[in-house]
Image 1 (tube, rainbow, N blue to C red):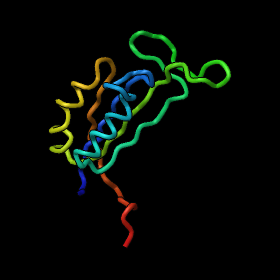
Image 2 (cartoon, one colour):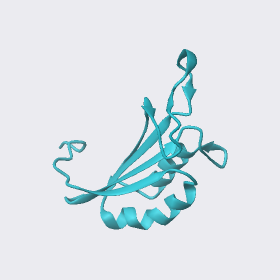
Image 3 (tube, rainbow, N blue to C red):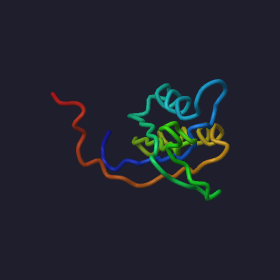
Image 4 (cartoon, one colour):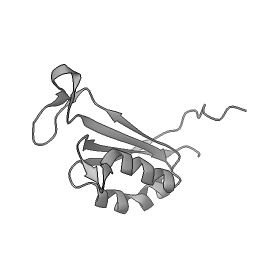
Length: 110
């Protein structure tokens, strides 16, 4: 991968499903099968979206439909090729595509 790259951010809810699994897991699995450079799904501590309902860790630390952010970094063409499929998987959420610059890739040390 060479600079510049694109940063894809997808915002979904922890309770969102795709077939019989969590949506965030299905998306990361699909991105892996598409040979993306990498993807990470992270649970948010607190957040709200267009419904203005606050999502947070609930009573006794049990999740109350936390926000999930899926981050992908790869070449623009690869991400754009995956976007139609990803858009079809997400019924409600937010998808952002941002310009990014690869400063260093320290994951592949010689």
